[in-house]
Length: 443
Image 1 (cartoon, one colour):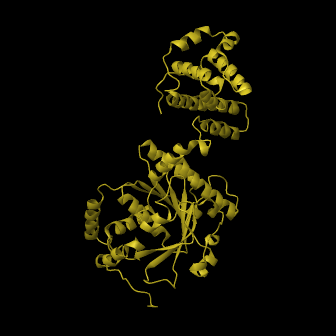
Image 2 (cartoon, one colour):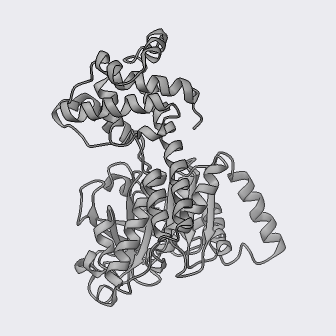
Image 3 (tube, helix red, strand yellow):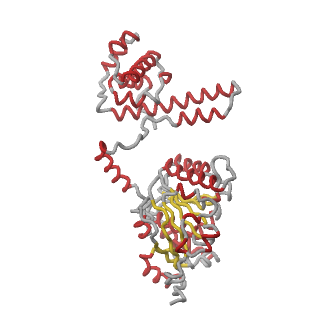
């Protein structure tokens, strides 16, 4: 963000704010340093004012500052500046915050050069840079419950507006309207339990509704995922649409007709077991530099990732760390993250009614970081059609409802998955795909 004020003008207004506003001086006193001022007189005035406020919790009398610091000319300049502190408080905070970030990172770079020249521990450089990047006057210190009723409820409304629907009606009901930025949602199942297929269907629905989506894949190639999107988007038999020049030309016509007003879909493949959220962050930043931002992100899948930091060799701790990093990435880029994982051997073997989050494969620590978790499988007692996939909500910070079940219907020719409220659509679409709609043998 470019500042609107020059260093000279902004420094004068910062000092004016420090001398006249308790709210402003409180914001600055634990982050802004006097060394950031280019003018040494401003720096001295700042130190005197801050030290007095910390000791007395009152603004320092201007006449006392004049006696301590030779700054009469500066006071005259400040009085001549027509700047209403109350009306322009937010503007001054934004400008000062940007100035703080600029000065902090410059100082960290200078300090880092000193560390290298002195042959000190280079890990100290990371601490310096991370500390500088963390400087922020607008940090949220929490909610004052009783004294922010109006503002808090307004924020609730804004959060509801920022929810990203999943466009599966029952899932949206379970999650109170969809997933939110800074959240991690997980779907679990046995091996070949339609985990990746669900992620691709979610991507297709998001794009169909104008949302920009990105999938980080560690298991399936970019082209193979794109092929599945081809079949889902056009309701075509995945085993036939890519088999001849004629079929591919027909597919291209169908896709070109459908792409209008669709949201962006990006598929980025990484080698299995080698990618971390640091790699995802690099990709997201590169798109950000190009003016492209995503509404929701998908990861296929969490337990074949690496941690940003050195793996400990402990499945529980490593899995927990990776899920925490993925959730933090969601906070950093303000996009919900959805991933999948496998059930362990016990979870595969026991009856679906008995499966819960303790049956996560490799690391139960994943469950601690997830905001929403659902396990997919088949409940033989409740199965009506052979192509039903049940899901059970086992953790739900997004909507509160747990231990409830829903179902998907799968068209195995096109790999399209339908919500249980879309049963009639699923039955009718068999006319196009020629897929079976077999009723369970018990009926």
